[in-house]
Length: 149
Length: 149
DNA sequence: ATACTTAGTAAGATTATATGACTATACAGT
DNA sequence: ACTGTATAGTCATATAATCTTACTAAGTAT
Image 1 (tube, chains in turn cyan, red, brown, green):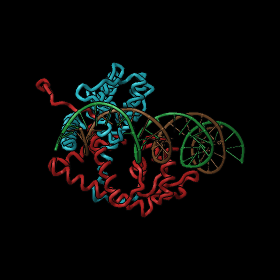
Image 2 (cartoon, helix red, strand yellow):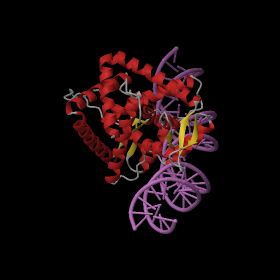
Image 3 (tube, rainbow over the protein chains, first blue to last red):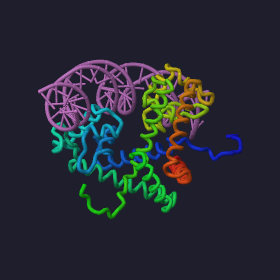
Image 4 (cartoon, rainbow over the protein chains, first blue to last red):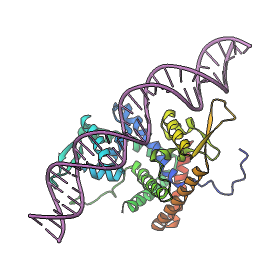
């Protein structure tokens, strides 16, 4: 209180603008999964679901994208395999490599996550305006494309 | 390869739109700090810097916002105190509580982080267009305000 | 064929986070 | 003022997550 008249509109720090929504969505997903009965999933394991591609991905590949070591990713994948969320199959294009794939159980997790996200997006669209939300989505999408290029 | 003609523009999953830029910025900050000589900082400790307020914050408060337990936050704060990045002072308004404050060394870290972020924002503004970047910032800012309310 | 690179594993240490139980202070309602 | 409840933080302990260093095996490129 007793703050000086604001000359600037309190410019928020850039990283927080991404981090806060990320945290919010993460926590929604976590809750959603718990409600749906997936009570054995740990936050760190999300980085697998986050980075796995429909046709399957290599552990090393996912490790890079998640910015953790391949050993760490290996550990997460191994756990998820034991829990029945993923399976590993040989990569036909490279004898050294294996592809990590979602099982049906794994797909079910993705399903729940997607529903939660859809719900969050709808909620936010109500608050910001549907149009703005769409614009926001497009801009973010462009940004992500730039970052990945 | 051999994908069907895209009927939809490949709608990216919502959380990734926040997570990817967050990761990118995080890694830039990490590198920036290393270059500036702050080689003893661990990623987890960022959640302190991320959530500490200028006048100081309570550990419990920061734990909530970072979505970790107060014990975990206590551990991070303790480390940072030993390293000289923060200090703890009694909270005059509550005898049980203490305020965690940045030391000069802690402020120096923030300084570096802000510079890195400013640089990233400029870089992104070049790619997306200055105008769009500003719009993106505004929208995100609105969204964060909504989330925190 | 030889050297270099890459995918993944092994062993072991460290860092990060959580649970449950606890102390001390604060607050709220009689 | 007294009593009960809530809150800030700690202690002890367990587990999860991540890293470093070193290694094996398969691929790639001269």
